[in-house]
Image (cartoon, rainbow, N blue to C red; front, side, top):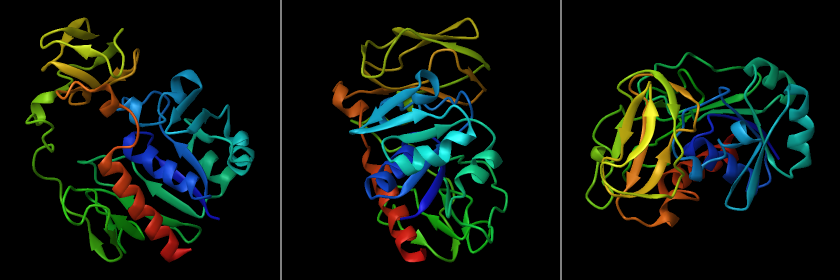
Length: 262
């Protein structure tokens, strides 16, 4: 099987890592020390804060340092998460495939192709045969999850896909930078206008009534424009946990890409 390093512990990166792990590949996840990913019930990210996490019967475990990565991936008991230096992770695990699943929609990625490993980019601004070897389409539609062998993915565009009629209005974006503080939890029922967090000493309220599907972890420092809260108006806590449809389809595309190039 193939050793894969997945960059990004959000719901997409976690779904990719979950699919690779359950198909027998050796997988590790890399991210910054305190990422602001909000769909924490649909990802492994909480392991970076509490040490362990679980996503649909697969456990994630924070690695103490880069030296732990190779034995943890070979053990295959839990997915290792590492928030240290990326080059140290690369040198320790020596992955054959590196997948950029950070979903930085507006960032222009550096050229990351290498003779030592295959590179796969997920989402806007990746060009197969250009800055990566292969790319995966992440936009909703008939091509979601498609493997692109030559050329770019779709450009960023459009509004969030509506859930029960609510699109962008179900999300809260940081209007100030600062420390995010909350006592609320993923899956918790809230009323419209209820205070769910404090950012830079200002109250953050729920834009709709429903369940908290996305919530940045308590104590994280966030930047202006970061998505920090998402409310699911369907009010079903089950929709806030597990693998989402879009991340799962993207993960299937990554599996297909790896099967075709290794």
